[in-house]
Image (cartoon, rainbow, N blue to C red; front, side, top):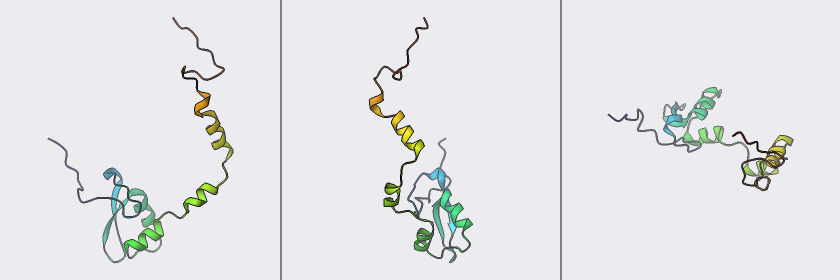
Length: 107
């Protein structure tokens, strides 16, 4: 017997649009309306001092606070740069070993 989803009415988070049913929940707005949100936005809304009155207000309060441009202009940190260099495609020769390492015969 196939398992039926418990909440077939959940479509997608009204804030971010995620539609993975495993992460969806609901939250109640100040006016009493119940809306679908992901777990992250449900938690964030619960932590807000004041409940949002409308979906538009909920999205503005909980939505992305950084503009995409802010992310592009951010300086690359040292760890990110080291990882990018370590895993660049031109460092691989297709043999499955890293350059400078020998493969030992275990037969």
